[in-house]
Length: 474
Image (tube, rainbow, N blue to C red):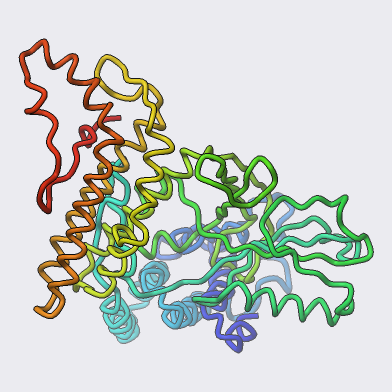
């Protein structure tokens, strides 16, 4: 199986095949011998993959290794285990999973030390030194203003560990697969049309081209509308999904792209049945899928065993859009070494003349009428969150402009001036939207003798941003 994966250049999956073989060997070796230098079983490889627990001999009906003809292969010896681990590490290196190489070598180091095989130990350290030196240092930033932890900066680590797609099968022609969903792991930077074309061709050869149809959206499939004589395939791009506590623990790019068993995709919709509508009509259904095993695995697809979905209201969709642009700005500004072209492209997408209407329209739709509490904050938690998102967005725009000013050449000064002008216009146009918020706050401040003119300040030069509220407000 590992050789077949190798032929298809699936190095991560080939490594998983040998890892499971090593875990199985370790499990049976531990049943025979309890020496201190030997691994405690399959669980010794848990740092590399959660899936190795499949090889644990935890059942009463497990065949005893002492029975004749059982576990007589050379792999079920100390030397055999060492060979399996070294082959696993070789494939991990090809898959650029250098961190996992360190973990698998840790399992066999005590064996080599007990056997005083210092020459082999030296070679392993040489391989590790070469592999670990290829890992780029983790550059961290605060991904979301509400995060109490740092996240790895996107694109700082150039490694790509795969692209994922949800594939659903519908129709009687699929027999037992009817209604079953899978997550497919594809090579890096695989596009949706490539996967769709490949699967359509494959099943067309089985059932006939006229009997296979690809569903081209991610909406819930209404089986009553399907032709029972046809085979339907629904393919959707998905992304790895991590809860907040998982993102806090997974501090590196590698950790956030391995041991993946949950994936997410979003489906835009409106209540009248259209996919897209105006801002106040745009809803989004977010679906989280959980797979039977975690990726990477010995196979390139895993069955979906559970799903949950929830609907985002229009204002929540707007908050997500603003936060996404803010993250893009923060990532582009923190890039090391600085990438002026990327920074300018992101800036243009945020405060360019052609897109300036977007954030302003969001504010007009969702923040035009706000009820405030005694502290001057919106009573509605989503309005308050959107208000804070805008403040953070404006701050990141300012930071990005300052960064870009340091990077540009003399011949780009006119472009910089245009961006600064757009930013000033953006903050000016936002001021009336939030003017009533400031005005309501003045009523409480007047009692303290604070003049209205000392609080309301229109931006007149670059860098002066409209104050939407304290950045730590919740």
